[in-house]
Amino acid sequence: MSRLPFERVAIVGVGLIGGSLARALKRADSRVHILGIDSDPEALRLALRAGAIDAAGSQPGRGLEDCDLVVLATPVKSIPRLLEGVRPWLAPGALVTDVGSTKRLICTCAWELLAETNIFVGGHPMAGREVAGFSGSASDLFQGAVWVLCPPDGGRPGQVERVKQTIRMIGARPRIMSAPEHDRAVAMGSHLPQLISTALARAIEQAPESLSGSGLTDVLRLAGSPWSVWQGILETNADNIDSALVTFIGRLEGYRRKLHEGGLEQEFGQDPAPIHAARHSVSKEVIE
Image (cartoon, rainbow, N blue to C red; front, side, top):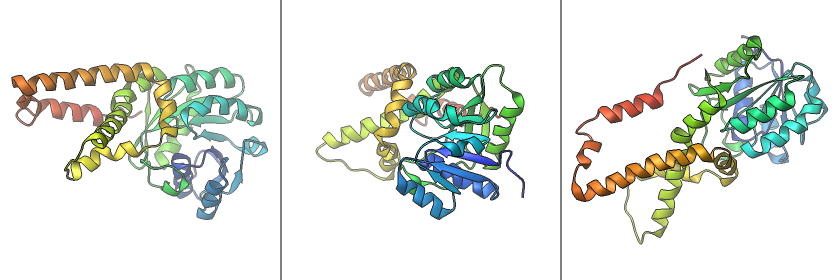
């Protein structure tokens, strides 16, 4: 069995993503020691019982001093505050990363706080489910998924390569982007679909009755995602999400006009080229 490039890992936040990461790391290398940190004792109990973590703590403390990798897996808005909490306990040279869904605020805070003693590489696995908590975690959650990395300018290439190797070993595919590039890209490809799904669910609530097949269930799946996850995402990427909404609303307004004037056939199967182009842009991945 290949060894992970990190021997002792701390995961702060043992929920869906953090718990899945712990499971995936253990599957890749059962010898890695994982410290799980979470304010929810039930999450820690489940993670210990599942063998996903080896030790547990309710808040960052002395256990971090022995870790060569620290992963922050809490909601986006809590990560800047968490960085201040973990900084006093980090071993010199330990690498810190996160799994937050937006990157500009987190990376700016991390690079300012940790620049002297540690390297921070922003991270975002493009994987998830519409459920929260360790009970929804899975060791194969990241299989085949893109995992975006946002390293600092002038960062240590060897350290970044260790993170990329770890990501590959759990079945994901690393992609290097700047934090602004990442936030623009996920606004259209991830955050806008969440708002569309939520808006449709609310509109259907107001309809006296509606009939649907499995297609509606697929579209509404994202509407079940918790506000605790999305609050920070929307607040920290509001400018890019606003631009995505303007583009999408403009498209809907055009559909409304064409509904009466004609021309909607061009948006459907008559000319599949735009649909194929959109699918290609979603699936195209520049793997580093």
